[in-house]
Image 1 (tube, helix red, strand yellow):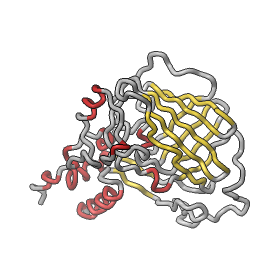
Image 2: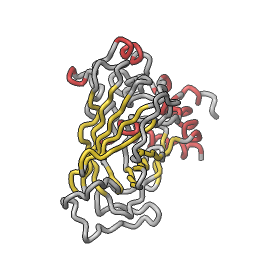
Image 3: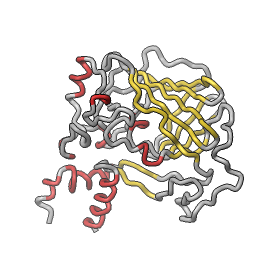
Image 4: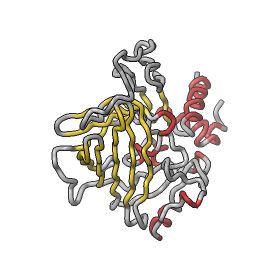
Length: 288
């Protein structure tokens, strides 16, 4: 029984690049071929759906899927840590010092799984902006008169973006997902500013650091009825000499309203199995 569970854990971690998360009720990401996770039946494409139709004004609500574009295993999609000069970030001296303290389990600075200090590996929240910059999966966006709410597949977490005119706190207590406010720049572009972020999180899977001065700008642009684009800009003057674009118009495709978003969680039980068989394989030496 234990070996069967271990095999399942191996399969999951291979897909998620060694992260101890388990995904259930897998659904297709192509519009019109989604599979309902409750009934296992294919969801038919709505007859009236035209993805190329004009976008509705002031509306980014819906179930949006980025496909494999959101995995970003080497770091922020537009600036991966791949050794290419054009992807080198403008670190300050303090930023470089902090970078050397991170030990990612993927990319050009990779360490063995058991040696990583990636906070997400221990089932800590990814926070913002990493929720956008690693394992960005199917996301449901809801709108109310006072806020925009994002429901993320990875970690099964939710996030509130206030649209009621409030301002971010001047001296906030740090939060994993910070304090987010949003406004409409035009009929089809929703701009979000987030601050007050917990310094224990990483910017992305590559271990890029941030400070308490971090400001994250997200631009959600609805290109047409069936397409949403997301751009993410990082601004942290303590870590980087200038702002940099982490995501540049990553595309999401609108899914049918019946689409069942899967459960993708990091659980302590699975983490223990992961550490036993992958993260710290030496721990199995006395297993009989």
